[in-house]
Image (cartoon, rainbow, N blue to C red):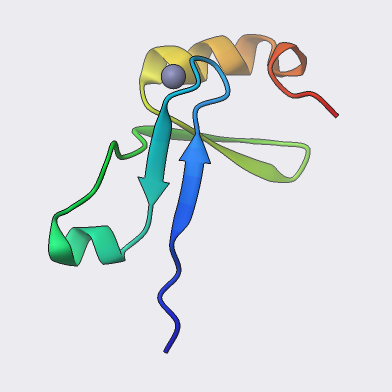
Length: 65
Ligand SMILES: [Zn+2]
């Protein structure tokens, strides 16, 4: 059984986080995302609600494609 480990970076402030259920079991995790947002079918993770708010107001500012 594969253990999925996703690393995410807050698009607003650049803080790195780890997104996984594995972390819950072992307790050894870096920052955990406190909020998520979906933009153009992609999920973004944020380390704080403030970052999510800023992203939601103008996502195009933070997403470069
Ligand atoms: Zn942030």
